[in-house]
Image (cartoon, rainbow, N blue to C red):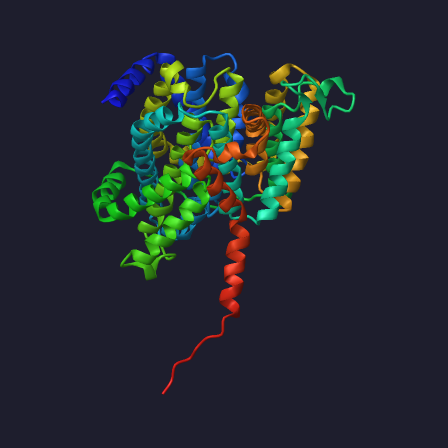
Length: 505
């Protein structure tokens, strides 16, 4: 009941007309970012974050989160019409979306994708509304050992549950920790790894690093690969939309399963991409038309889109309640909160109620607005895709440079952004994950601070991390996650070496 009252209060925050304007601007920019394969949700939010510096935190987070919802919707357009995933989580959508477009059913596929996305987001928003206050209330009892245990679990979960090799995740994370440690030590006042440079006193700014890693790095890679768009035309009219909605009850279980899978993968650091593949695989396994998947099944479009949007929304739950992002985009949004002077975590629900509930209310309205925008503007965004990338890329690079410069009004930040851009390009070429690096860069300071406070309390004894059942179970689970790749490899090896027993007469 308290959650409902708070949510109504959140809708009151949205009554400010400017917040509604920011929401629609964010949705439009997000769809634009989503349809451009050179960008993406995290990249777009990182690049456009400096635009929000002059806004109030509530308006800023509404606009940035709307960009995210728009990007989630937009990724399906290129997947279905051009067979080019605008986002990594849209890859599974191409399997049945593009065949549908080839059969002249692009409108049906797009309407199904957008409706599935909306349902997935709605499910996770309900979860966020009713579960987040409980998690935040519980987390208010946390002390430094519990917070460090949660940070440790997040880092280790990336190692244990990531789809990339564990050594690559650990290497990326270690680099992030090293970069986070540069600058002035706030506890002792000593300088760390500045090498006599006064410019490094303030350390590496998170925002400049993210713009370079995500924005510039992706553009460099896309320019190298070259893009040519040759897609199908699409037109969505009301008749097609109503036909898809009429058929939706047939896919209710697929949508619900996708939403549950997505919510779980969003809350844990699994992310939207594995959620979309997992949901597609489950739909193929349990559908009576599973043998037709890959040839143009509407169910094969709904499953991944529902899961991806559900995961994207659910990733905000650990970010808001514990200060731990569930996805790269949530990590960028977390950085935004820190820049605006807000401390993500359980106290956010106590001290910044307008902000939190305004954000949650905006997710409801943002997804409704996003559904309307994408259903009515598909031909426009499909036309934008036909602009040569050689024209779009320099524009994006200029936006990145302006964004990096406005952080501290320093030209050096543009050079730092370019260095991080090359680093991001190398990471993508060598198939190293960027998310663990960003995560360590954002959370490294906070994890270190919690660890040092816990050590001061316990006078240097590590037993503080097993001092009560809660912190002990979290730390034990984290360590299990850390060694999980080794355990799973050992079990697989044992299974291979075990001789098969063939029964016979």
